[in-house]
Structure formats: structure tokens, C-alpha cells
Image (cartoon, rainbow, N blue to C red; front, side, top):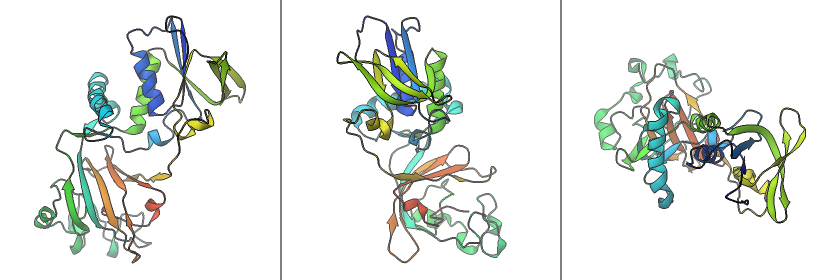
Length: 317
């Protein structure tokens, strides 16, 4: 960044993910911020708006036991403050969740069962109607207790479970809906004077060794435009080196899958870090992270292609 701290500030943030949107929010809440002396523009390349990359599809995990500890000491308390100030529980799904380590086996679905929620013999398997479950899926409270499963973690099949252990005490792990949290940060920033621009930055403009602005292509018109700036913040995630090649940032391929349940099903709020032995006889173990969403959804997240197996893992249909 560059510019005189005592003069007018024109700040451009490249990237509408969680870092870019949160930065815009925090800047608009700074005691010295005034729309009359400071402009804040967030430039997002996606035509669909902010949070279209990993920021909108992540697990939304907020934990006191996460790392680095220097950041955690600030971030967890800040999340609590934001939720209290802006009704985060309703606005972006802020809530405390259980967190545990799960080890077990996966179970294959037949082609007929896949995506239908209907098990063998045409019986529909669900969390709220257990009378139609096959005998092997009937809950065994004693068996669940032996394996360490919490009483309310009913979306895990104890018959596929080898071991469960809690990872943190209550109150140390929380969750936000990543898409709603990111869009809320942007909305709250614009309420105080920030501006969202849809366009793709093609270059940084330098004058006398200092940042002078950016060149972008507007999404709506495709027209080239030059924006002046005293400060430029690059928050484009894995795409940041395309703007500044010297940045030591690389990408990691990962997948996320959203599994929706029926609206009548209540999903206990847990985050699971798993070790799942796939049932294909090849001795393969995968380690997806599974996040229960507030609106009756599961989101498994895992590296590379491990989520592509046609496996129920430990979830009921």
C-alpha cells in the first residue's frame, strides 16, 4: 500500500471473498473513517457478486482451538461481538456447535437408493420415522454410548461407527453460514459508504514507485476503466498472483458437496472431522470434514477427489 496518511484516501480492495468483504466492513467502522475523506471500493470479478468462491462454500468454522493462536485470540471474540451487534444468529447463522473426531466405515447405496432417500424394500429411511427402518439401522442407545456418540448426534449411523471422541468443550467451537456471513459483511460495509464494483482487475497502475490505481474491465459492459487509488488491498485468494505475480500464494484443489434433508428433519449442530474406510475393497480411507448447516443441510468438505465416491458414509438417507 502507499499514500499519505494525512491526505484523502481512495482505497480499492480487489476480491469479494471473506477477507475483502471483512476488510471493507472493518475500514468503514474505523474511528477515522468518513465518506467525505475516504472512498472504499471492493472489486469482484464474478458477475454473481461476492462470496462466489471458497468463501461462500467453506465450513464456516470458528474455533478457539484453531490456529494460528495469535489470530484466534482476536477473531473468536470479534465473531461474538459481530453476532451480538448485528443479530448474527438470524442474519448469518451464528451458533455454537459440537465438534468431534469420527472414525468408521462407509456404506454403498444401490443405484435405486441413490438420491431417493428410499432404502431396500422401498422403505423410506428418515430421522423422524424410525418404524420403517431396517433392523440394522434401529438405534441402539447402549451401542452409541459405548462408541462415544453424543445422544443428539442422530444423523450418524452407530452401526458404521467405530469410534467418536469430542475435540473441544462446549463454547469453544462455533459456526457461521459462510455465504450469508460474507454477503452480510459487504452489505454492512455498503451501508456505511463502501461501494461494490463488478469487474476484473487486469493490472496495477504504478507512478513514481507508488500505487496509483488499477485497470479493470467492467462486467456489465466489458469496457476498460482506470480507477485511481492511494491504497490497494489484494484479497483475491488463489487468483492474487495473477495481479501481483511475486505473491507467494498457491492454490489447493478441494471439493465441497451440499446434502439437503427434508425440511421436517432436525439436524443436530455438529462439526465432524472424519476418517472413513470406503467399502469398495481397495483399503482406501478418506478424511472429509462434515458441517451440519442450520437449514437442514450437510456440507462435506475434502481434498482433491475424495468426495466423488458414491458412498453414504455415516449419514442416513
